[in-house]
Length: 129
Length: 247
Length: 119
Image (tube, rainbow over all chains, first blue to last red; front, side, top):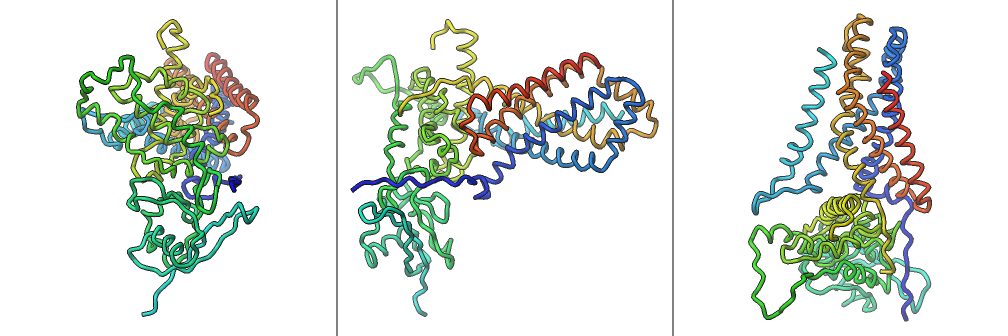
């Protein structure tokens, strides 16, 4: 006789294997990113006020250990997003020259890590000069 | 030296005898060159002839012997006992499929999904007496990787999205659709667009990527689906911005 | 196959993809600027720091770039958070989840527009 058994899928599947945990970590970087975007909106609003007192309060806040801590977490999350994103791009947009496949690392550097370096470098130069 | 043994804890389900599944433990002789399939065959030949499981080629090309080994979807003919020895091996049927008996799963859903994507050359002109279609090596390379699927369903067991949406067409079928869309002989991309562009098509995928990791034939279904998402997005915008165009 | 559901998911995914690229390229260095450059690497003269920062951010190309990054990154995050919640079991929330997530992103975008225009 036939009585197919349907097995329940674990609700905590994303904790069960190394690969699933890494996947969830990658996805959850968006929460940190979203939090930073909210902070950024406040930061731009404060900067836009144009007076030295508001700016002074921004500076004091920025020097506070909580700000340093949160910024460090946000930076790690954002960098993790960037690294995973650029490494996945060659799978989404593979390139071939004739019959030969362009190696994934080349695509990742040309479309991701390279531009990342350029953008980061020029932004730092613009703020520090 | 006394014969070493390795323990296999095998999922048993006998619908005619019991409501629930159980695990049965077998101590199998350990040989360095044996794969898990050899161990299962030894059990069936020497200990318990009622143990049911699928297998055929025993060399990784037929796709019959997929099962979960310590929670990972694998081909039992391709995994050596020595990769686990001296630990025990928990042998279970492929995840995300209903179990008919012991390690035998019901794959009707998968077969339906394969048919849904129209996995054949679609052309406006069909005349079998005409000359063969010409294809350059470069045109073949465009889709060859995605044609290597042996329908072993390991990717379906690795995909966590299937539980949330059992109607999700899934990695192998979507990769197969993409294989035909990329084939220079095929003219059916538009016809497959409604299928691929549906919620159950490419949009059911969250790019976990485990399907590609477990695939024994390097088909890279995850990559195929993301590429199909790009194509589906282009088609969507084209349809929105230029609705008068031929689909 | 019972039936296939039509969807406009492609639109949200295109915003997610564009936002993913923007966030990947720009957000790390922006975090570094607001978190470490500003408090520690701009010298001691508060007035000149303020003038430089304010001057840089009020340039129109910079305002437009900031708007683009915030707009697209917001929708990137909204899309990803929506799918994470679905993976956590909230698939039943369906359209409500879409409305919550994407309106939050829209709110962020509108706020960014207003703030950047009035800098």
